[in-house]
Image (tube, rainbow, N blue to C red; front, side, top):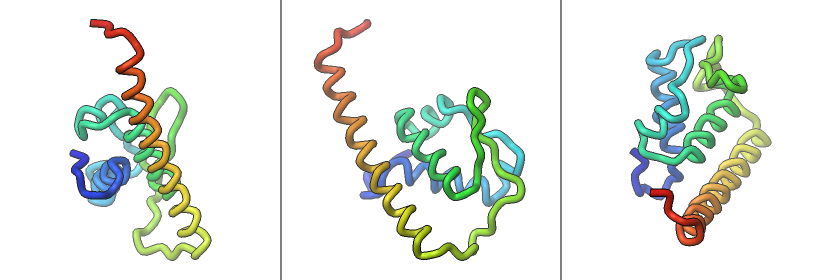
Length: 120
């Protein structure tokens, strides 16, 4: 799913999930698919899925419960809700940190593949 578009994979997954929430595919109170199911659906890593869900949580669209999953909030915030300039600045910084973390995770995965013996 995550295409080479210049946008981070987690943002693309978050966009897809956000659209499914807004269209009612995942109504308020419903549980999002497991991280494993989302990894398979979008062909991305666990880090990407976690970052996507974290973004939705930051926006107030979902709430997470340790060991139980992510659930669509009730009521949903309206898409046109006005946010302050400070909120947008914080969100931009969070996206930047997510991008840095994704790059670090990919580099670490490459190192692990080189250093750790293959389990097969």
